[in-house]
Length: 405
Image (cartoon, rainbow, N blue to C red; front, side, top):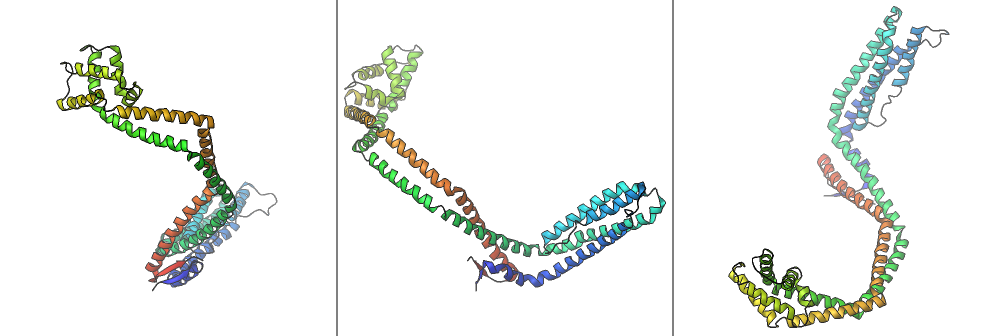
C-alpha cells in the first residue's frame, strides 16, 4: 500500500528510517575527526616551545622560531570539524587538512633548515617532526579507511540531499507562480488592447474588396497550374529548338527566339500578356512545329507527340477561356489594389499586424523569463519526485507518494 507523505515531513521521516544504518558510520567519522584534532592540539603544543616572543631582543634564530609558532596557530586554527557529518562535509574536511598540512610543510622547509644549524633546537625540531608525522598518519588513515568505509552510505545521503533540493524547488515554484500572478493586471490590460486591434484588423480583412482579391488570387493560382501543365512538353521542345538555333544548326528569327525563351522562363506570363487569341504566340508555335521536324532536333516520339497536342490546343483556342479569365482576374485585382492604395487598407493592415505582434511580444516579455524558469523548475520537481520515491522503496521497502502542500 502506498503511503502518502508530505514533502515537509519527508526529510525527518527518511532520516528516522535510515538512522540506525547511518549512526555507526557517522559515529566512527566523529571519532576519527576527534583523533585528528587531538593530534593538531599536540602539534600546537609542540610548536609552543618555539615561542620566543616574550624576549626583548631576540636573535635571528629566535625570530625564525617564533615565526614557526605563530604560523602553526594561524594555519591549523583554520581546520574546524564539521558540525554535521555527511560524506561531502568530511570530504571537504579531508581536503582542508591535507592543504593546511602541505602549507605547513612548505613553511617548515624554509625555517627549520635555519634552526637546525643551532643544536639547541635539535630536540624541539625532533619533537615537532614526530608530532607532525602522527598527524599526517591520522589524516592518511582518515582518507584511506574512514572515508572509504563511509562512502558505503553516500547513496542514502544523496536521497536526503535530493529531498532538500526538492523542497527548495517546490518553494521556488510557489514564488515564481506568485510573481507571474502579480503581473496579471498588466497582461490583462495589454490582452484587451490586442483583442481590440484584432477586431479592427478582421474588419479590414473582411472588406469585400479584400475578400475578392484573395479569391481572385486563389483562382489565378489554379489557372497557372493548368496552363503550366499544358505547356510543360512545349517548354522542353522550345529549349531544344532555341539551343539548336544558338549553335547555328537551325535558323529562327529574333522574335520567335525571344518568345520561346520567355515561354521557357515564364509560360504563364507569356500566355497572359499575349493579346486575345494568342496571335503572336500562335505564329511562333507554328514555327516551333516546323523546326521540330528538322534532323537537328532530337526528342522522344511520345514527348514530341504530347508537345504537338499541347501546341494544337493553343492553336485551336482551347485555352482561350483560361486566358480571358486570368486577364479579367488580374485586371480586377489591379483595380482593387489601386482602390486599396487610395483607402490605405494595405498600410492599415500592416500597421495593425505590426502593432499586434509588438503587443504580443510585450505580453510575453513581462513573464517570459519567469515562465522559462518555472518550466525548468517543474521538470526538476517531476524528475526528483520520481527518483526519491524509487530510492526510498529500494532502501526502506516502503512505497511512498510525496505530496506537495
